[in-house]
Length: 285
Image (cartoon, rainbow, N blue to C red; front, top):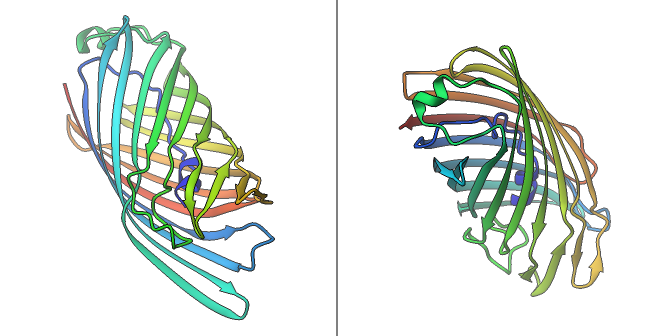
């Protein structure tokens, strides 16, 4: 279920510039519930899932080749409950444990020079372009004899490009990336599970009322990701949409809270979750 969660991410301002020497500590609570559309060939119907995740993260910015760059690390603890009908019998599965660790490196390509906090405060804002690489390491809890797992037992990589455009108090952001997956060579039943690349596209528009007080609306689309299990090609190609809103509130000079809500608009295969999130961030130079 981790792959679906990665693809569904709807996070505005991921390419918003920051001065170098910034440090961030983040604590998040995420609640997702909804239905899961599975491969029609599987003898499972009426699948519903509930995921509660608690995420701790750290990030910092620095200069690299004269450009603004950042690195971040996030570790989730996850509780999963899945119910579904197998024939005439309804079954329930629960899992608790640490999820896969995630790393992200980002760098500004255009319009994002490495600036000190004082230089950053007096800069002239303008369009910018950045790139990032997210890596998900197989550190999460995984049992090869279980069909439902928290960890993916494989590596996942996502290169991505983002374009930002500030217009007065408005902030526009467009991103495009692709998830690439290694094989899970110890899938349920001792077989190999492969997955095709999963393309992701996202658009966000936000308005800043004052520093760190902003409201954003966003949309994301992801497609692909068809799987092959034990050399059998599955009918689980994805083509899904989500939309959502995010509100950021400053608590003090160094702290802020973010409230997020997102929902599936159309789901072919995969999870159609309604997600609520609460994130506390502490930042310093």
